[in-house]
Length: 608
Ligand code: NAP
Image (cartoon, rainbow, N blue to C red; front, side):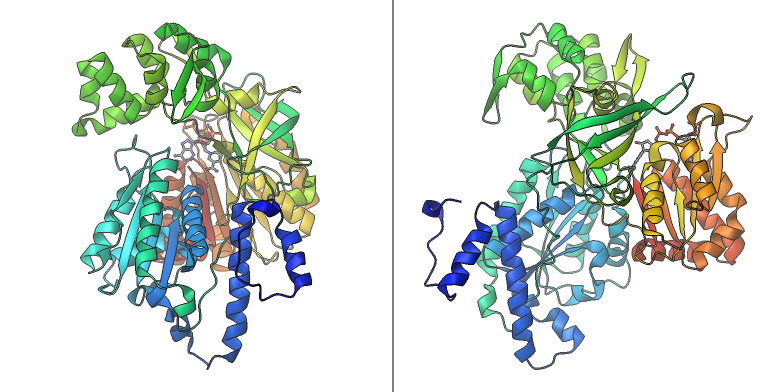
């Protein structure tokens, strides 16, 4: 910020030297960091004031200020809801409101009965499930113990994917439930699809406007303004919207040549990026679509890639829209609907009918947009095409390295390359094929997506159990490296599964070395296609149920990473069976016990 654009402030309460120091410190900082500093100094001020206040009970302290405070809660699986909530809290803080920001897992539900203004941003997963971190909150609210909430004004925003039948089911249920408990909406239920930025910004705007109208500024608050629990703002310039162009250090196939699927280990340089990560975090990758696929689209619609297209206030050549800005490999429900209308195809229109849910899910899963364009031709012009296709979104890969072992300047990921033949042509996944072919002259646009819910126990003497079939093993390579680097005394148990021992044993030599070095204490393997019957990690888990249950009872932390649709659910059911068989629990108690472990963060899942 230049001196000319600095805000005009009232006469400073600071001595000239301190003011000069502060000016130097804040020179050139982006708005997010300035907001963070303002929240931090407000928290310091609150602490200083508190010393002079009469003692208050913890309950009073928790609720004091709730009359003029906006609580922003989020339930987030991949970080999108968290980002929306953070932005809302930052803007409300900047507007002078008394705000606190919490993840649902960290919110004491008993405070609901005193809460006055609550904004909740929450995503829905696959079949309409809440994010893991929000399970306890959702269950409490839906349960018999939920208090009446006549004092509460609330606003809910749901994030989801409209290609799933249960689109935004969690937010819809919670919005209705708040109302049922007597609370009043201060903003209408908002819903945001995969391209959530615009609708969520609109919803936040409405919430903020209403909150400004209704809430008093902190100066008028009576006691104990709580500091905004903002996440530490990434101190770098690079992030989701401004990725770092990372150099490829290593890009290597890690399954045997005869494996039916290609899995690659990729090492990227973060040198000079300022990006920092921890074991458990994910690496966001902004892919580019392959030139051959862009050509396929242009050919199918007989369009010219050089043609300039204006969309959302931006003007770019069509080929650039298609290469860097639009989702070409994932078919979505809105695109199918647009295509059905444009082509007038009755079969496609039928697939969108409510009773066709399963057929629709299958269709979306087995087709890419190009298959529709070829099979049911439409005559979209360039503007219509850009408007119909979804914005390209970054892909998240669980990080497979620990900065404590490999150094902060590099990051590793494990990538299963999506590549199959269907409908008469080869099909590729956008990011995995982009990464698979990334070489010395490629720069990969990346950012770090923090994953606070998926962290090693702080106490290094705690044991850990890691369940990660397929590429789900990636974060466990990071965990084992981290525990090795920090000399953690706890035991590490890995359950890994894949198709064939001789072809798909990801990081085999590293695990064997780790066993020798004492960095890995147990390794159980399930190769699904080596025997007559399928063997999965959950079969091993049940076979070793007695020990597994004992480890958990002694405080081991349990982690699951990989496929959310089938694997994570089946593993959960196997854990229920283990608790029944070896802990003598009833089905209900076993489920309650696991829910408690999830709530406490001793059982963490990184699945999608
Ligand atoms: P994959 O080939 O889909 O599966 C790996 C192994 O799991 C195979 O042996 C497979 O057996 C087996 N499997 C299939 N169904 C199962 C079930 N219900 N329970 C337990 N095991 C089952 O593996 P992948 O493609 O490498 O990746 C796994 C999945 O994890 C992908 O969906 C990926 O997107 C996801 N993933 C998520 C994260 C994350 O959320 N952070 C990270 C990495 C990967 P068969 O094929 O023989 O049936």
